[in-house]
Image (cartoon, rainbow, N blue to C red; front, top):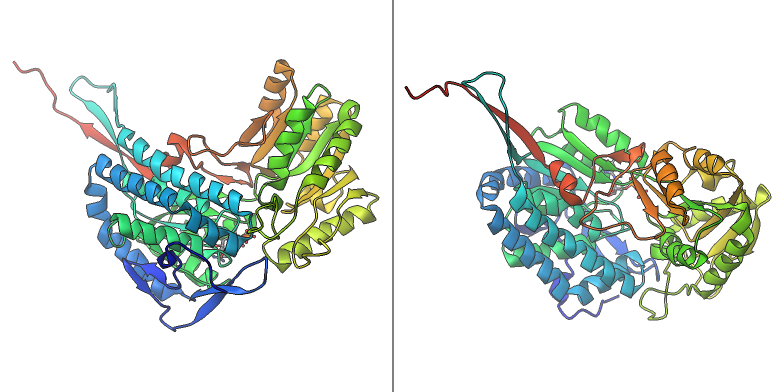
Length: 493
Ligand code: ADP
């Protein structure tokens, strides 16, 4: 299969290590599969520890000069990179739809979002201010510098093939830290395309490297990244299970970690909610990326008085969702990423049926498209015993719970080890404060389904992660504080 690109050079089948486009030492490759067709789009290198080490050593060589540039010089390069991404948005979107499956319009929107991290963090890096602190002795001064942490590594998932790599690389590069990135095995091509543009705009060799590998190679690449003493920080987005493993591995050399892990987002709808707002929001929170986001609404909790009206509108909405290959202009959701993803969604639906859930619409795979094209599905009668109440479904399936009181809703919402995003729909401002403060989540989305932005701190609490990405808080994760204790500042006379 060949992709129709304006600039075919953006589709690379080699990795980018220390400024060179290279194959694996072994020469081995693995296929990148289009989930809509099952066909291979490209073959990329199966790398391991040795290639990763070379990338890290290249980053170390590049580090001092990169950190030594003026903030505005790095900002200029990152701005150029953002502009290059936007100028090539059609091609980047095409590559993304081909490897990930999301509708082309959604892929292009992700490219703009991904580019926004380079723009925003480039600007913000000019404002990495230090501090002076009143000292406890008259001849003393306390000065605090904030300096780049050093060489960093990133490991990203497949659901946002462009935005996850840029959300990590942008703050790192902006403040002067090189990054070695391992994109997900399902979607390496979008990250490689960003590296093509990074090279073109003049980001120096070693500052941004991409190491590729298949699922079997991931522990080898991750093992080197987490054990190499040069590396000072890991930024990971993915499953809680792998996040815990990487955090443990990082403990041996005491690396700073930021982790953005699984969610189990509650979506709370109170009787006084505006149903139009609720439906517009759940269309995003449930159907964007076919429900394959860590902030997708996973448990929809609806109060008694609005329950039936909500269910009716949700079923109507779901009937308008067009499941089709991402390059079909009419597609609103594409296929699930792969067979294991389909198996999990199907298992959750079967479990719901077995526990008495009523499937009102959907419930299986699209008849015509087959493969992993799962139908928008609405199931009522959910409770916390269901598998989908306890695990991320990662598919276009909504299970509706019914609740009576605010206290019950908050208790159910918090009944999970996860704490990434929660959604809250009500017109009562006192309730917004009460419930907003009571929910154990890193992000509370109030009367909207959109929460992601370069300007905002994205991240979770409990087993959903550590640290924040985006906003000036996201920059902190790539900085170290250094305290200078000055003595001997005495009277002139
Ligand atoms: P998902 O369920 O979203 O695929 P994973 O946590 O398995 O989540 O994958 C997220 C990223 O972590 C991918 O890039 C994957 O290759 C990588 N990964 C998986 N296992 C390991 C590991 N043992 N060490 C390092 N990276 C890993």
